[in-house]
Amino acid sequence: MKRRLAKPAIYLCVVIAVGFSAACVCAAEPPAGDEQGTLGIFNGKDLSGWDGDPRLWSVVDGVIRGQTTKENPARGNTFLVWRDGKLKDFVLKLKFRIQNGNSGVQYRSKEFDKWRIGGYQAEVENNPGKVGFLYHERGRGWMVNVGDFMIVDEKGKKNVVGKVADVQALKEAGYYNMQDWNEYTIIARGNHLVQILNGYQTIEMIDDDPKGRAMEGLLALQIHAGAPMTVEFKDIRIKHLKPQYGQAVRLLAGDNLEGWAFSSESQKNAWSVKDGVLATSGRPGGYIRTDDEYTNYVLRMQVRHLSKGNGGVLVRMVGEDKVWPKSVEAQGMSGNMGDIFTINEFPLETGRSRGRYTPKLHPSNEKPLGEWNVYEITLDGGDLEIKVNGLVQNRGTGCEEVPGKICLQSEGSQMEYRNIVLIPILRQQ
Image (cartoon, rainbow, N blue to C red; front, side):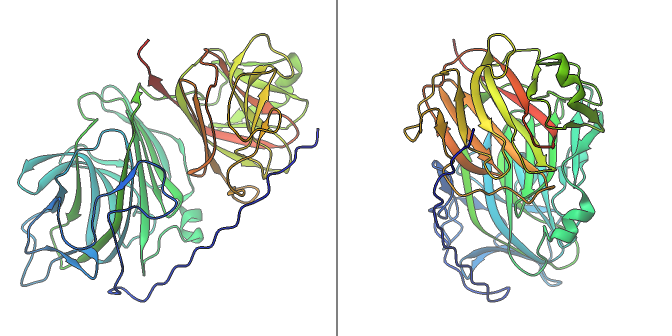
């Protein structure tokens, strides 16, 4: 069946950079393009709502500046603390640049003494390959290197279980800009953490350590003890996430297909798994599906096309295995990720549907053939949301709230999947 594409919208973005100490205009309102519910927490004028050593922290040219000199050093690691709230489950975005030295973004942290903070820290420094890693200040120390997927077990043991990126490829792609502004995106849902730098995912972690992990706490910005340094921050905004999340789990663990079943015997030749990567040849048509059923969750995975063609993710699949079962399809066709198809009259309202097809909201933001995309599907009651590489590409309401299996289609394209994570959403019955 030929699938029509939505007419693309056209957007214009202009960015002007004029050096490290250039003036900028910052406001409490988040930049255009942020999701609804995102709040700016730095007004661009002063440190209202923030608390730190006034010798070291100030607002200069509309940005927060942390600075030490030989004459005015830091007395140990010190922090600028956001006092107007705490972070639990959230999406945090901010921009930073650092002239020299070492810094970080603290989240879900606690205060041991005034301006002395401990907790998760997203690393900030001029060192590609290291900037973007996860540290636990005043806690468990180093946590996740750039490029790694880490699971910390119930006893606190750290286990690298996969890759979210290749460090050398990140460097070659220029994931970090040593000369100017960089943007962090930090996402925390329950025990699942993700850090993204300039659109490139740097780490992912499931923290199952009940004694060591932090589920809520302060936001703070770091000045590191040592040599003189200057670090700056701007465009700081937070979206507090409302759902209550359960324990995140990997649906594909290791090099076996435990927990998955084929839609037919012929599919056994279409799928393989190696080094944590699930691959499909795309033929014959069918799917691989979970044994278990799930209702409300965030489903997050990395997907790439090795050849142009079709594929997809079926959610809330009910009934017997067949081509194709009753479900909602998050389209996986190359160039069309984010489109929606309903199958066998599965109830869903989008207000933009063309029969059972709903085009994505924006032009395709997929990465080139052979590169990994992050596909994220959220089902919360009757609400459906689909993100491609962090951009909301589709929404729907009235999605039938029924337990169902999760299916990955074999439908023409050679595709690979990795880091398939399910974060349950706990709803009161």
